[in-house]
Image (cartoon, rainbow, N blue to C red; front, side, top):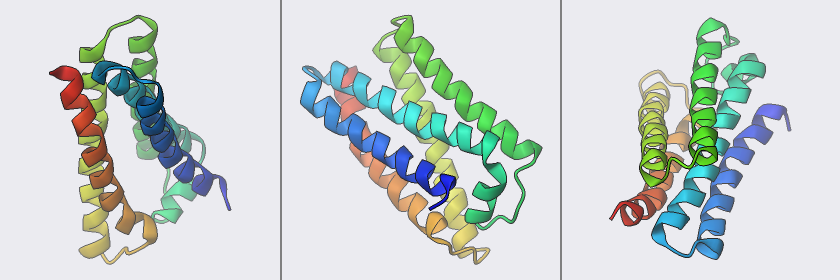
Length: 155
């Protein structure tokens, strides 16, 4: 198993831990959503940013996009790390539920658009590797799991 596979599993494991921990330790919808946001944004955006910046060529190959990983991959990684760092700032500075909702919304919108890109690549371009086929399904599952917590926290 290579580092990219470890990071892929770690992203989804981080989301799972966040949802579990929110239900175990969260005493209110806002607290549960806060826990889920921290774990999800840091696991998905943070680890994706690290992967793009440091392991971009192998990530590009695994996704079936050849051995790219140049400036565009770096730029995408920087954007993901910026989102993760904004999440750290929001928690460190106590910006609250609205900031967390903005960060989570940004992540979910990115993932939905990214999932559409993976589906397009799989079905229109014939790039049917496992990552391209699973990304839309896992994204839909993540959105379906996170939205009820977000809605409850904002109500």
